[in-house]
Length: 272
Image (tube, rainbow, N blue to C red):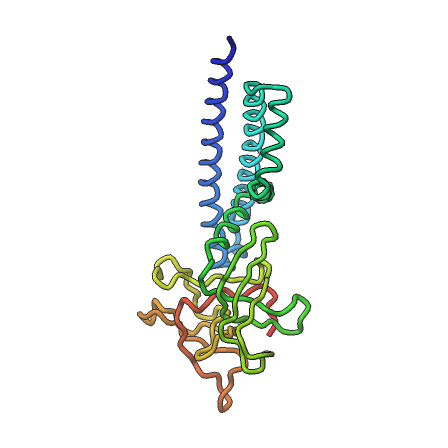
């Protein structure tokens, strides 16, 4: 019988699949390290001889090749498994039951497949957003074509993996809001900025003096553009010293303290 060699081949390919996934995770870690480096010191790419962007490109190429290899090995495994399964009506009925009786699972697998096709880093980003449920984040609630961007502190209620929309709750709307009650929004991932972890400052990116950031204005739930004057590390505290744009008092910009976990990177193209 040929079943033993077939099973041996299947086991060999499952090992190869595990190896490819482990390599993808390792490459993903390196990509995330490069992202953090470039976010913390974007000016480094302008220095002569810097190879940061070249390294990042090579990492993405490697991630793409590993992802394509994973798809290839998965297809081989499917073919091998089909060759061992009973053929004819029984197989057709089984496939019909899987297709019709497990619709939710099929949708989830489709979403995961779509994510995998994009890139491992995007898949990791989606997992990160899915884990934000119940947490406070910064959210842009204005339309893309609005004259000004408005950012508020909101609470994540749900993340839809299929539409990649984040449902959030504005727990403290302003007095001018219609109805004055709590309000929900469905926003794209690009409209959401997670805050740093309050209980883990050691892993938080520190913005250097002179850097423009987006920060929660003291006593409010609104975020505005600000300039870093002093860092938590230099102040030996958990607060930044910031100057907010358009916060002039008596002809000068007052310096205000804001906890590090209420400060995020200024989005590209921010309008205020």
